[in-house]
Amino acid sequence: MRPGEERSLLHDLPRLALLGLGACFILLPYVWMFAASLKPGSEIFRDSLTLWPERFYAIENYGKALSEVPMLRFLFNGALVCALILVFQMLFAVPAAYALAKLRWRGREFLFGLIMLGLLIPYHVPALPLYVVFARAGLLDSFAALVLPFTISVFGIFLFRQAFKSLPDELIHAARMDGMSELSIVWRVIMPNAWPAATAFATFSIVAHWNDLFWPLIVVQSHAMATPALGVLFFRAEEAGNDVGALMAAAVMVTAPMIILFLLAQRRFIQGIATAGLKG
Amino acid sequence: MRDTAALAGPAPATRASRAIGEAAAAWVLCAPAGLALFALLLCPTAALLVLSFSDWELGAPELAWIGLGNYVELTTDPVFRIALRNTLIYVGVVMPASIGLGLGVALLVEGGSRLRATFRAIYFLPVVSLLVAMATAWQYLLHPTIGPVNRVLALLGISPINWLGSSDWVMVSLCMIGVWENLGFVVVLFMAGLTAIPRELYAAAELDGARSAMDRFRLVTWPLLGPTTLFVVTITAIRCLRVFDTVQALTRGGPNNASQVLLYAMYQEGFSYFRIGYSAAITVVFLAIVLLLMLVQTRILDRRVHYS
Image 1 (tube, each protein chain N blue to C red):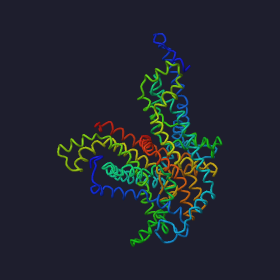
Image 2 (cartoon, chains in turn cyan, green; image 1 turned 135 degrees about the vertical axis):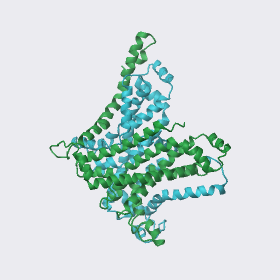
Image 3 (cartoon, rainbow over the protein chains, first blue to last red; image 1 turned 180 degrees about the horizontal axis):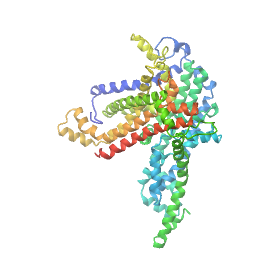
Image 4 (spheres, chains in turn cyan, yellow; image 1 turned 90 degrees about the horizontal axis):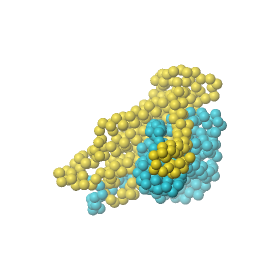
């Protein structure tokens, strides 16, 4: 099994068969979720294993998922929260990463030590005290509560620092000669040269926060503030899990955006999340 | 002030002012991140440690310092003991299974060029999918009466299994979904590790008599994957320790606490019963396990894995 070795199709068949078997296991819930979202309840409850619906019921199922709960609102909330988190993370992390990578100052090692310490702490750990503070401040069930705790990404600082370190110092010297301020060097000289790191970080951040359940579950109570992950749970609570077709339609709708983004930018996604393995 | 660095010339007198300028710029650039780091991560974590020594409940006017009281209670709390045991079982099953299967898949995917990108994309799909939504899809698949899994079993003459509703099967089901969820992540990390192995080494091994694929794996692939493997083990173990979404979406710790896990117990105590002090103690245990894993990883890294 030498990597990348070209073989005849016949010799390749066992490999393809094994991988195909595993792929079936992976795709199983997707296929059934999508199939059920097209079927009427009577067909789902009937004792059959057919995937394709006899009576096409997609409009009813998806219509119900959209009307029973404000599903579009959930999707919009998810997009807004992800965007706000990403913007703040970049605003905070990028300048700090530049200072840590390229400037000489006392306190640099100390701050970097704190960043490394922060890398060890899962975000579930500060959740409890943060919840208490948000509750006291009357900020529960708001965008502020959804976004604020994630505005600092120690992983982002770490990742950008690594990326900036490899950029040549001459770039910065030249910009200083031109009279640019340090802040404009960060955004106009350094960032444009570190796009791979930025896109990798962006995909990691967006996937993590679109899919997050723990924190929204803690701070959100109302439908108006629910993110996609909570939306599924709210919908299931409304429906008491009886209308499987509509529930699967809701699940398809909240899962689809990330899957579509992933299929459009596979390489970036895989790179982003594989590097993010660091933070875990 | 940030511009002073730019104005500094080569003369010794200005070199000092330039250094001061650079330091000042650094502090300004780091201030937002530094403040947020303290306010949102480090201070709350310190507060959590402190709170774990108190009996505070949200809404209670006063709190008392009870020392290790919460931790003592943990040792006798049956729910916590189940949660800890289940979490360790989950890590102990899902981590090795994902890594074993993931390494196999990565070797197979890298073993030829046909459909490589397609398979990689398929296996990676669960990593980007909304887990709560996919959990509801699994709930349908595993439904005792209408679920396709039990219907297939019925065709094979096997009586239906209550996958998520019986205490005998619930952890099995959660572990299976855990492997499904983590497999692609492991595959991608191993694929990255495999592509980093220089091709010439395989040719050299072949010249030295390593004729079979197994020999080449034993002599080249496995030793060179050492650092990757250690990294994957730690990351996957920590991912497994954080199991929460599937429990919340599918079982809520039930039936009868049979699927309690650390984070769900922490969530219930803190955010359902508002026993902040007690919940903080559970979180500290969780953090301690995470730190222990990281420490073990660093120790092993320091000692060996100096191949590259």
